[in-house]
Image (cartoon, rainbow, N blue to C red):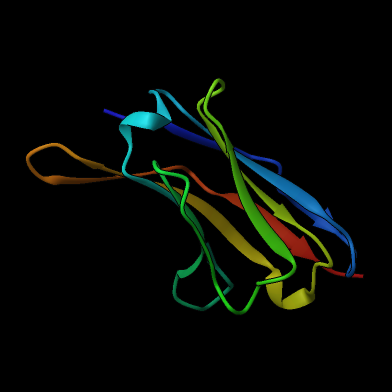
Length: 118
């Protein structure tokens, strides 16, 4: 079992920045990929960014140039740095970890709310 705990959400004005953290209860080197999703109010959950265990990074076109993903393997943590935030970035941000062990296992954090508003 893998527990994921997100933190760092909050209320920020347009143009501001936030850094979200996702801390895993296991070594992130044991996880195939860690992914950030977000769910705006009344919408589906959307992909934001991911980092694989090999360090390969993918960022959604909608946030490219403003958001970045990184990790600290010593802290078993993945981060989402969000700059130049816009009201459309509002939503609940979720951390997802995928583990492959004979089958695929998906683990989710509880989510952290990000609200961008003046």
